[in-house]
Length: 422
Image (cartoon, rainbow, N blue to C red; front, side, top):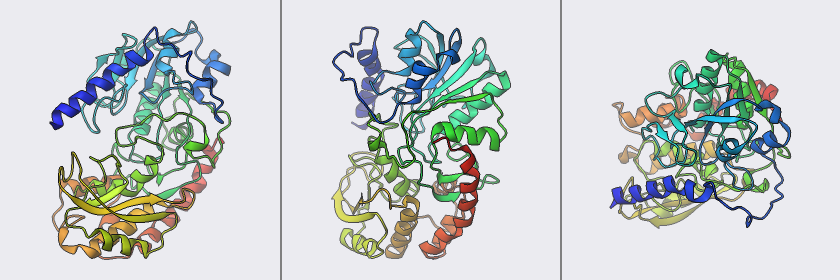
């Protein structure tokens, strides 16, 4: 049954682009919105056509690469008389988002344009030199979630490296950070031992920057040195969460169905890597739940709420995951309710939550035992260090662990300041 459901999801997602955005798609019934923000992909066509006029273009994008009227950048560039779109490049989940997280993605022929869609999450995660032959520039248009472990920004960085090597200009069509531009939280990754595709560079877990800003940071701080141009948004302010922008949201992956999910994955995503509790994946509330068959829901909620963590409330709940961890088993735990998106500190909540679980259920080896496992290694990679896991296993209080990363975050904040565009 699980394979059948996943196959149906793949078929629907893969065929939807043709139905929604085919050559005869009629958007006349779509109201002309007046969002507070104009995206980089809109500003490209409104004020920056000289950047693409007469150029052969490679586009790095996925299903999130739409404008405020739901028009894909793929379609706009493909139909533009001002340039020639000649190749597509897809990140994790594929150009049209039809692949599950971590799944190997092959090169395919794009069903909308008939162009070759190269995979940057397959045999290689960096464009091969021959894929860029004949291109005049590379354009990047993907919605991100402001989370260090999300792989899209490293697809962007790798493509910037490839562009630099081929001396091809690289353009980022900027987009909002759904968390806003002020929330910086979590530790700085240790790139001497924990650099990977879920955390390549020493930045904060939540870095509070747009794709264009983080591209500028990567380009200079890590000496990529490509010829980079960011097409800025118009109207975006750092105080804006996604729902302030007036823009439509497209799921960035199956686990991020709405913009609020970007906050919740930062709270539960690291613990979810251990696969010892369910973090809501397999339910209609991915990353908003924590539970297991052996948890006392009322006790867990009571102890967590007694900590009075700002901007969050834990409600006892019961649920049955339909796939993934504890599939078809009754789980008890808490639903995490963010009550104040300006006050909540997701990574701090995560550490407190893990400390409580370890104290309440010491026999469950929630963060593993004395022998290193593949899940423990993955947990350390997403944290960008083994220090958090070791401190929790040693019984150190959450507040001490959180305090340990503050000085490094302050240094990152000062360094990041010069790259802020808004």
